[in-house]
Length: 304
Image 1 (spheres, rainbow, N blue to C red):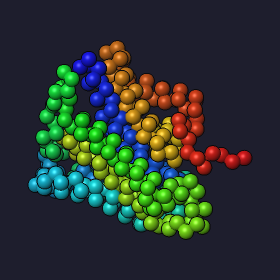
Image 2: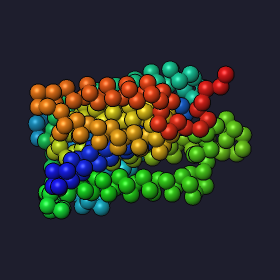
Image 3: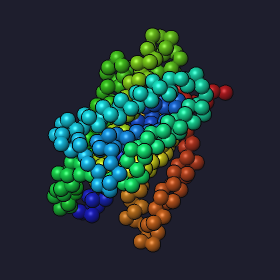
Image 4: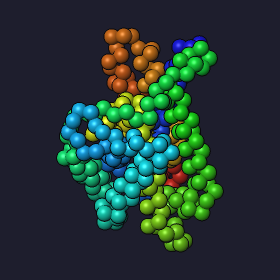
């Protein structure tokens, strides 16, 4: 029983990261039909914003002097602000361009952010001490579960419920859903495009900052490449869930987390280094079975 509970919490914790990342990508895709490959670099930037520029192996966390109730809003504001700035400076110029052009622009933006961080901090990972109290284990039904895992799962569920209520019960959320269904028609009906797009980028950036906070607390390091793995799995979850479908992206994120953790425990010891190959193989099978995704978004069906 304790071992099963540990596997369950590991799966939910990892799935929470993938679900938050997939949700951030799906928000932008739903409004602009843009797969923002700079999302992973926003994750890294949000964490490095807490550090003084330093080339030492151990970085100085100036925000560590802040209480948690100021630290968390600071990080969320950094992520949201960077995403909104990227929309104003870069993506707004490409709204009438084809999706391939916007995708290349997102790649370029990601490299700009990454090399800016390299210029300030060098490529070596930095050891940080971020919310150290969350590393303490707690007893739960006979299993010792890190407090951070419990908080990660609870915060993810709270974010998902809050975002669902926001999209369903507020005027701005209704406008965002209408824009995701048919952006041209929504504009004709009076939806303010700039406000909706900026809101989507702000939410996406705040979700990226939440991932950065969780990763920084889990690993105790700040690495310029830290957002890459999460971005890849989040993008896969977005595709599996159905491009443009927010519930599908969340569901696929949790399923990928569960598959990854389950294979880590179920595979023979000699096969565990190849766990990701088995996970990606399962992804291929799912896409062969349902190429449109688990929960394909309405309005994204191909018209003949």
